[in-house]
Image (cartoon, rainbow, N blue to C red; front, side, top):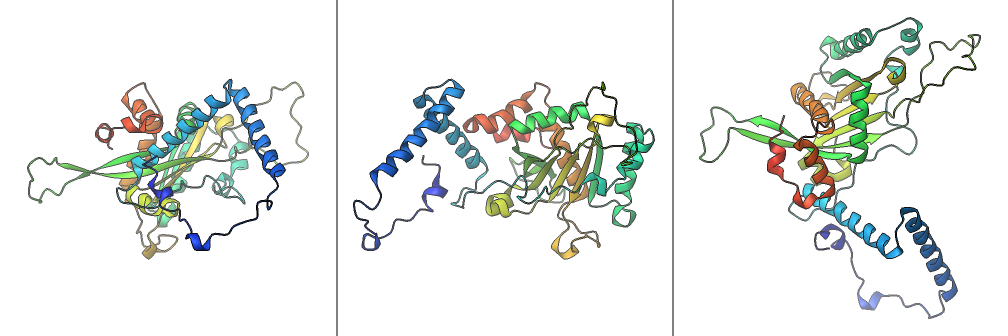
Length: 331
């Protein structure tokens, strides 16, 4: 496919004088045949599971790969740059998510009845006390479980998108015929899902009575999730090495017990500010971070309008995706 330039141009053919020739019997024909048989058997099994013939399965795989390449073309730079790899969902050693128990005293909250409003207030007060009492560099919210479930369901199917931020032009700048009063900055966003946290217990007392034998077990908590935002231009240039400017974390620890998901947003400090951002400098303004967080609801909590069609087109029919339509929903 002509659009897959990044992969094609990364391949090099060795000069004829340096090619190594192996004797005809260097690789037994039998091993090659066994490999083909195993590959064919896997194809046959997958095709049977999907109710397809092998030829139909191969064609479907080819079409899915073409769609994936078209999505990458949408967000790739016009010049020939290395094809960006997606953000890694999780580290191989452990989850990258900071446990909620390291932020809130969960057993203490569960030790006495707390309403959702009270938990939300505690969550807000905690983050307002950060950064020397300014709250800068952080966002927080309490999301009803049903809304989170809807957004997460959409994100599981469509985990990446591009969010436009509206930028007003300098009123002192001279007017240019044909230009509007607003510019736009695009941010690449990607969801990732992590292990579901266990339903917390109100007490770790070994002598506390066990639950009744006939008690109906509670359904497990939903998966914890994160959303990373980085400027689209940086993502096009650096791919998986791009720096996230904002990371949102949806904590689902209290989803079953209280019907609420706690949202925490962390803005990345600038290099000059150090790891803690002690001098108040961050890669993203507080208001911009707030608007980006609203884009999650805007594009992943559908109401049957054209925003749903935009996200679907970005993934399923990228050749029909229209940036002009996206700008109508700039925040």
